Image 1 (cartoon, helix red, strand yellow):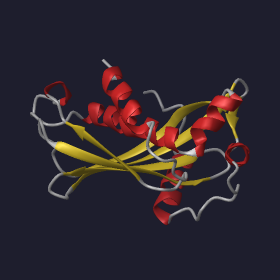
Image 2 (cartoon, rainbow, N blue to C red):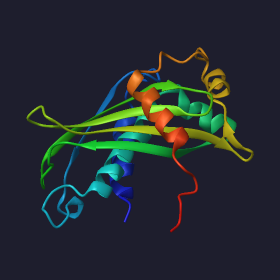
Image 3 (spheres, rainbow, N blue to C red):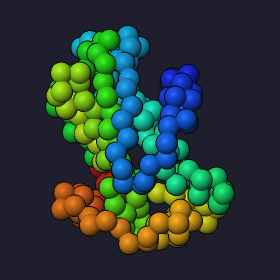
Image 4 (spheres, one colour):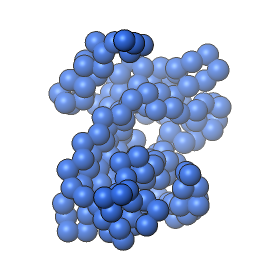
Length: 178
C-alpha cells in the first residue's frame, strides 16, 4: 500500500519551509520502517522508489512548479527512471534524501535524487524523467517555465543525463514479444 500517511506528514513538514528554485537541492529525512523491508531484511527496491516519491512531492511544492501546476490545472507523471543501488538500507536506518531539478529538454523535466545513510554513504541514486501534462498530453517545458516565471532555457544537460536519454530514444517500444 502507498504510504499516504507518511506523504501527508512530509507535506505538512515542508509546507512552512521557504521556497526554493527548481534546480536547488532540498533535503528530507526518513526512516526505514519494518514494513519497508524485503525478505533480505533491507529496504525493498520498490519501496525505495515510494520513499523517493515522499521527497519529490514536497520538492515540487517548494518550487514555483507547484503553483504553476495548480493555476494551470496541470498534472505531473513519471515517464522514466534510472536507478543505481549501492548500499543496503536496513530496518530503522535513518536516511536523508537530496532532491533537485537538473535540467529539461523539449518534453521532459529531469529530477535527480540520492539517498544517504547516516554514516555519510550514498545508498542509491535516481534520475527521473518527468512530464507535465494537461488534457491534450505533454506540456512543453518552455511553457511550464513561462508559467513559473523562470527562464525557459535549461541549465546545461549533464553528459550522463544526455547519455541516458539517448539510450532511451533507441529502446524499442512497445517491447518485443516472443
